[in-house]
Length: 264
Image: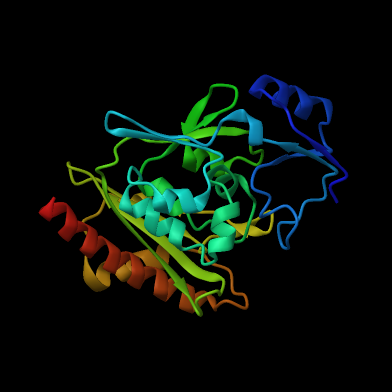
């Protein structure tokens, strides 16, 4: 339970406070994850990011820079944000949560669903950390320690990308979340969430790199995807169902993405 709430006025001060309270502190962005199961924190010190000006959305040439404190609803409302990321933001069903949750928080939280992350991976997004380092979203997700994110960079807002989220009901937990992209050279990215073995209680988003390199379509692609993923059975669905639906969704998305790329 959070007992102390600290509001630093600079990134340097925030990092210093985290060092002072190492082991007892957590970053506090929108707060949508810290006080609710299953991601409720056991930390006692919250370090607020409100005063760090991490909420801007700015275009730099073909790249888009999005502050980590940008609210999810603002992604949907902004004219600068690519359609694929708007769609992924809308996978968060509740507008109340979208008004509270932040982009950085959605990436950094160890949670059962990473609804935005597959689309960010497909968009080749990178995160800029508070200490100035810049790494791929995929590498950040794979790390067991989640350093403070200052902003997210999408290098090419014109990249053809599309995503989809399979749920049993409008407000239900996601079965599979998938996103694919195709660049001007025909290179593909296939990213999925919900179909990998759990770590720290959550199935982390993955890329199907081997399949990306192959020119598979139809039933061959469906089967290849089903064979490449290793979901865990739970209340949401069986292993067989998750493998099947992952193959179907990726096949449909790639066909539609290819069509959009040809029209672009």
